[in-house]
Image (cartoon, rainbow, N blue to C red):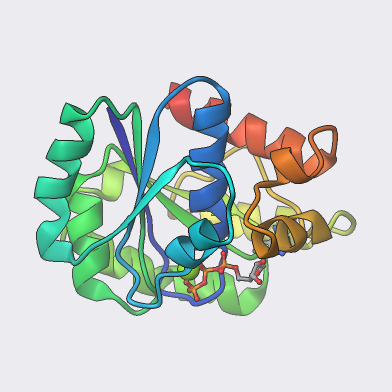
Length: 204
Ligand SMILES: Nc1ncnc2c1ncn2[C@@H]1O[C@H](COP(=O)(O)OP(=O)(O)OP(=O)(O)O)[C@@H](O)[C@H]1O
Ligand SMILES: [Mg+2]
């Protein structure tokens, strides 16, 4: 079982969006996935409640419950466990990072968001997770050099995922209706980039 922690001290960077999309992508590729939602706001669970499909499973938990839940997900045959965390949640972020194979930090390509990466990075320094940490540029504008500039700055401190997610209305529409972009518009550009991200993650 592969375990991915999605962590960012910055609110609204796209943690839950990425978590639910990767989980659906896994299910659509014939794998079993589970989302462990450590955010007291339980956004992933809320998305799940709007969903008609029976998968993926979303479990809300506290950081203390994480080791046991991951063991039981593995014992139940999960191929992928995705841990969604809240912003400003040091304890949950550290617990998730310590238990994950890969730590994904979604980051919008704005100066404020890029500057805030330092906070997340400093938090992860106390874990053994730093070398397994990557930044994912999310909500990138389709035009202009903003994202390239952000990527170049970030690459000096942390590896940047070669796949980018762009700012697309499909993400919000899909989330609002309890879907993923692959379900909402399977031929769309958002579905393409999510599949590319999933492929990259499963190879990393
Ligand atoms: N690539 C994207 N394109 C368009 N909208 C996006 C994209 N990524 C995220 N959003 C929107 O941005 C908002 C915040 O996203 P999301 O809830 O996934 O962030 P989060 O990091 O989980 O937030 P929080 O820190 O509050 O948990 C949501 O309304 C979501 O639909
Ligand atoms: Mg969230």
